[in-house]
Image (cartoon, rainbow over all chains, first blue to last red; front, side, top):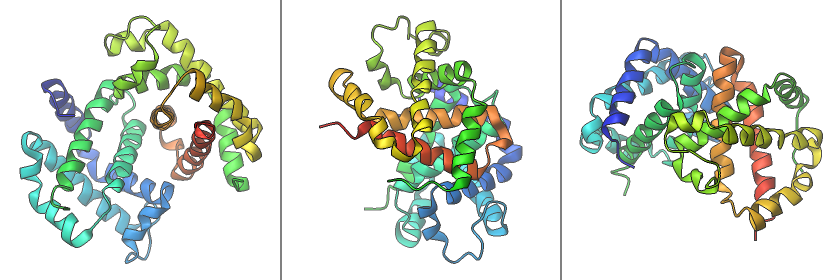
Length: 143
Length: 147
């Protein structure tokens, strides 16, 4: 489900709206995912604390959200733009790609909470398509 | 049988005690039809679904969204036997309505997002966990009688 011009415009629009809060949103989404989908904690057994608001969650949430923000600038070639991140996820992290969908849902929930007026159904649609394409690009090198 | 902690029962009861069915039900169904357009296949007789604005303002869709949301009431009243509480509804969705059960999951996700929009910071991670667990159980029960 590739992105059309309207999707791209909505995505850059919502991202510029939320970018100043990106680290906080990332921490919130990641913390939520670890709480609501406990199976995702299996990837973080090396963290002392996986609860929302903890130091590792805040730090890593910010890292993830910054990478997504970067992907927004590479929307026209996600596979090319994310190739090294894809290698990282494929060969080192080996995160089951089903989890990308789970994180995407929690990103939607978080943005809906913080920016309810801006997260319209059409923005939700565009962002969902973008995150799906991002997930595909991230899984590109898996096999 | 599903085990519910006291905290989960309380959290879920609180959501329903404060639920604005008219607002949340209509918005959740409209959002589902917009974000996952293939779900419109079940709504051929519901008038104008041509674009997002038409869907958001469609009175038949709004009314149906409210009806669907009230469908959750029987789960709240039968928390300890949701599977059987939904047996006839499950058969209806399978045999008469022919709805792919994956759609229940899509609507559930939209419902969670609409509630998150309304509650903001009050939609805590623990509340989200209890709410989504509740919806997962209902969705499973609704798909149970398909064959």
